[in-house]
Amino acid sequence: AIAMVIDISSSMLAEDLELDGKPSNRLDVVKRTFRHFVEGNQIEEGQIQDTEQPLSGRAGDTLSLYSFALYGNGLSPPTLDHTALLALLEQVEIVQRTEEDGTAIGDAIVLASADLRQSENASKVILLLTDGTHNAGLVTPLQAAQAAKALGIKIYTIGVGTQGIAMMPVPKRGGGFELRPTSVYIDEDTLREIAATTGGQYFRATDTQALQAIYSEIDRLETGRNVSEQFQHYRELYPALIAAALLLLLLDSLLSQTVLRVWPGPEHV
Image (tube, rainbow, N blue to C red; front, top):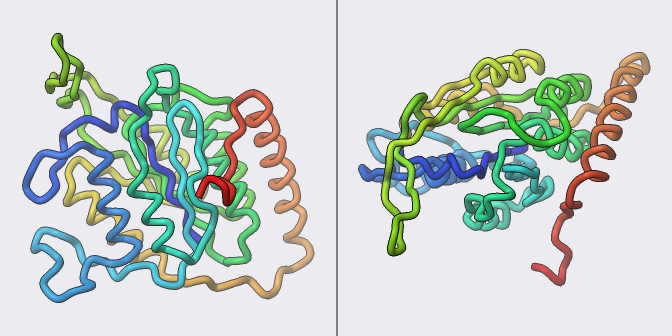
């Protein structure tokens, strides 16, 4: 089971990557690359470009999708319906309201972990992609990582984009936008610690090709497809129960002090 957690804070609008040889913002590149990770990029002969890393796709994997800025958002619960999940991925946009901007990494990990906790799959993985530093939410990244570790969840963290200065669209007088150099910063130390705590890895993507290579490496590392644990020694249950209790406490704190975000019901589909 794999949970994809995507940063949608305003800094993801930075145009320091490329798609099809043209400048592109970080979010669009992330969405394209994750789509290839899910469905593969060699569906038709000749479709893959020479500069792309081959990806076989994740057929048979249970996948879920989350985004986060000031709040964490559940977009798709764990599902085998990759077509529906990718349709939701296409709707992911940068947060529009300034008061909802931010980077709540810890809260996002908790939300994804809460769903993965219920999975019967032997392999439980979070792919956390961000271009910034934790500055919002109620749960620290390391608290969330420790809870994930106790639940047997591995987190791969990906820092995307350049460090220092990147071109960002900013409003201009008379309407419209123009690109201006803006300071950007990725807290790589925290991302490394999240990954190390959970037995995952930290990756750095400074260009589109590097991000494709990272997904290719994760595809290689996580080869299992919906393999369930059929047996569990009774002594292993204790840490799992402790972790579940910790996670529930974190969730209760999170949901009691923020807007409750739930999966959309049939009336919203």
